[in-house]
Length: 427
Ligand SMILES: Cc1ncc(COP(=O)(O)O)c(C=O)c1O
Image 1 (tube, rainbow, N blue to C red):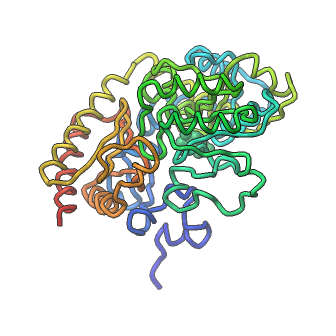
Image 2 (image 1 turned 90 degrees about the horizontal axis):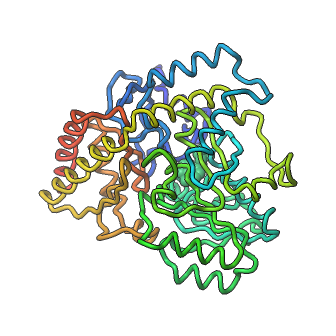
């Protein structure tokens, strides 16, 4: 009998063969996803030994590239000192200090193990602080997989069709209002109707989960002003964006500071980590200082703290951001050129080193316009790029992330692959 492949083995013991639905290839043609054995700088290497230029960056965290020596060494050293102590320890305190220092308006921070927990905790905290229940969020944004935020969610939830997941009790979703992103009139109308019951307005300030979608000029300022007028807490979910575009929050880059932030991904340097924090007055509600309970056995664990600290140290000292943005811009222009040569309409939304190629729409400002992007064309493109040795996130609603490990040579090879793939789209 034929030996089962790794993925066939996975499907026997794990639902869909993946430990997160966003890793499945179902929305790009249903082929089995590739099983990768390791990462090396800007490359992923599959179990057959084939190398792929990687623009997934593990959905964002791996900003320095895979197995960066500074991060690997920090993890190795930390692991010799005990993986989990269950007590306060220096590296988690240092990581908290670094975050408070780098993120504007973050007076205090609590470390968690995932971004999901970080966002979930900001919502509970906003409710504790305001004594109100309602949450305003936006269609097509993704804030992790806790019950309350799986209402019209983006990312994997959007592509696998679980935008409104089974198993979420109506009592939870009744308290969540989902509005179109970038639409101030709808926000104003919702606040006019429910404003005195709204605990928080939760937003990805630059959305990463319906593809990259930027706020229109003035949108975040107005959102923040309106929320505050009604006494609601403004929460920026910066799980993707913090430290992605510069050394700090994207809020500060855009000139808007929220009351609370949720962080994750890059701050753990590829190990499990999240964090939430913000104004001291609000953070004082968190137990054991205050009455909002939130906890975590693995929160602030020494390995994640060491990997996060090492990553943030390299980002601060080497400032790879301008170079990463330059490479991403070269990709953007090259992809647009290639698409034009083959008469394939595409729109690219880019900020710094992150961008999304939408096949079809003239412009993408919200979830409805993101959904205009052709699923079929993206699937053909994705498969063609894989054949050419380039690994993209398997969804039209995700981003390409350039890491500090990418060089001009990878960009050139990627653009060659784009040209071949665009040709296939024309057929
Ligand atoms: C903006 C945003 N918030 C929250 C999360 C959840 O983070 P985690 O997957 O670490 O739970 C994600 C994950 O992709 C995200 O993109």
